[in-house]
Image 1 (cartoon, rainbow, N blue to C red):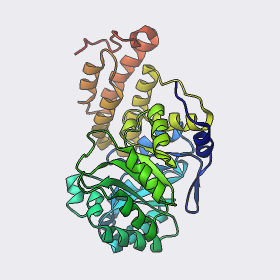
Image 2 (image 1 turned 90 degrees about the vertical axis):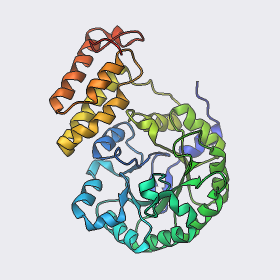
Image 3 (image 1 turned 135 degrees about the vertical axis):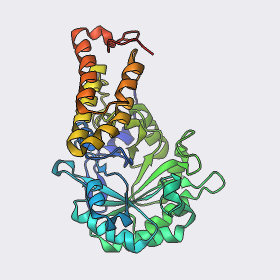
Image 4 (image 1 turned 45 degrees about the vertical axis):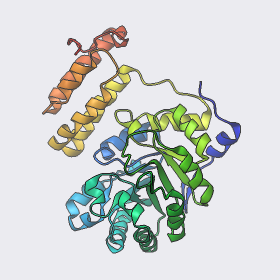
Length: 353
């Protein structure tokens, strides 16, 4: 049973104010490169109708390649409220990209100062800005003065264990004009390994007047509530916990608003969702979407007997028809005999691997 203090529930039932933007949810879907495209966001939005969504991270210099930028910034009318996340190390390029993002419909501009991937940090973006606070400050100030929407920052607690500067860095971002800060409770050197240190998020929350959103290890309703109790944060952002599970943001949001833990999706629900996701990727991206679907299918198809061989086959699909055939066979077997979804069963008609 998940318990939450009365004071925390009362606070989190209130809308989230990001500058002049009001969001009717304290649970946000993190921007995830190669994941949070329009297809994925459409599914998250179904289960979390009031949450703030984020696009994939967009490099500001991509403004020179309008076609590529347009695809990353492809936003549907039903996706609002939505934020476009940008990264770069040059304030003028960031300002230009931010203006373009606003014309595409962004309600806020989020600046990535936390991505740990080498190809991003070597270009001076992402978490490398934790070691260049003056540059980070200039970026926020320049972008904030260039657009009429709130500017927010997503970052980490520090570069490594010997260089944790979360409080000082966050104060500088607030002073430069950031109107919300999302803090991932890991250092850059950790990447995505080891537990997130939520106590650093609590320290940053205590130091700032703007909203602080907690990120890292938010994988369930229980973990979200525990994080909020420890940090006192103004909300949570879900990241890798939503891979193959676009239900998570909505589950947490529902609990914070009602105190009711929604029943988890059944295996049949998950497979039907995987099938719809596959179709949406084909609809929006064609053949490229089929190749991208392979990793998504691997995330959906796990945790039950017979998952391994089905997953292996789905990770090799080359056509929409092939993917539909595999999923339809598994779905049909479960619809015929729901007991097949129980532990020890094989819902796909193939031998478990």
